[in-house]
Image 1 (cartoon, helix red, strand yellow):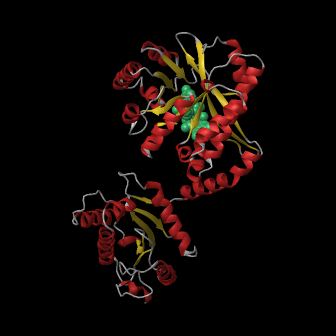
Image 2 (cartoon, helix red, strand yellow):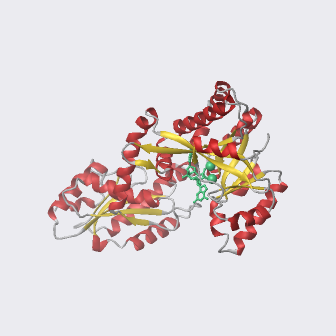
Image 3 (cartoon, protein in one colour):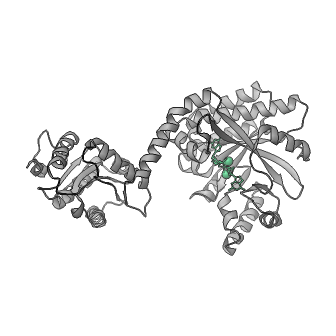
Length: 435
Ligand code: C2E
Ligand code: MG
Ligand code: MG
């Protein structure tokens, strides 16, 4: 039986570093094994290490190699040479083909962790696994590995869940993602994207103080696609940079249109996805936009989500300073939703904080949340910044929030995001804040 080749004899079938199979040999041998052992139920397992790249950067490459060899030695010790196979494909990626009943995944992960901890490397090194239980033997082995890897991607970086099994829902989601990706370009060219505007309201003055531009996708066949579905895809594949620019331009065009009609306007805030900060021409793009539509910088505000802070703080700081020197107000979106809210508040010269709607959701259930909200508003006011509370849906929530201070609200209680003509009508009805 071919599967006996698991033993570490170095040769062209084997990965030189670890002595496990290399990728090509593994694919070949695993196909043969699955084709022969119909009597056994198998799993394909993809494994890798959290932040392996960082480990290679922080420590010497030898340390990285030592980790890989230690892991490989342990895997060899648990793989039965008669029924199981293992390989290292690239870097820290291991794949196993193992009988389901021999796969004690929690134990494997626990043992791998403790073997690595035994090396006394001062970094938290964790193993993650994605598992595809082989149902269709005629599926090419590469696709089986893709499925296991899909399950792995799902949990990568979530420190509480260390392994996941592939299920058909993941495949549907991947197909949906591919469909979205394949349609974005056409959607932009055919103007399937549009913006809705959600007014932001000052409950004490009874005035609309600004609005947020939110992108909407009306697909000719699938109807409205929710931003919750396509924005993450656009962020993964980089399309968000073009989409954001489209949204900013639509917001500017809308403002110009109102001004041309002789109407007063309030600022529109637009979202800047974190990927934008890698485009060095961003300030230039924004100033060209203002020039093109003959707008002043106060007419557009820039929302930056809290999670952008973790990427590259110096670059973000420089960019925010540039925006401010150009005359833009900069808002921190989704405050309190991530891990770096207070750091961002401490370091960045922001004008307004938008408190994440998770707080409002919990308000009535938890007195602690009410207290946190109260002090966040107090703190932000003491720092001379404005506050918007997102997701206000009821009168009770609105009353509580406005009792806290000079707080603006954004939420269904005052208005949902509206198509541009409806927003325009609402502006006509309401007094506005004079800038
Ligand atoms: P966000 O920037 O925090 O926008 C606020 C979201 O909260 C919007 O969802 C809005 O419709 C929703 N919302 C407002 N009031 C309420 C309320 O009272 N209750 C509830 N349940 N929801 C409320 P939307 O439009 O689905 O957008 C979701 C997220 O997608 C946005 O969160 C933003 O992160 C992103 N997004 C939307 N448009 C754009 C865009 O043009 N560019 C980028 N980069 N991201 C966008
Ligand atoms: Mg926003
Ligand atoms: Mg928000």
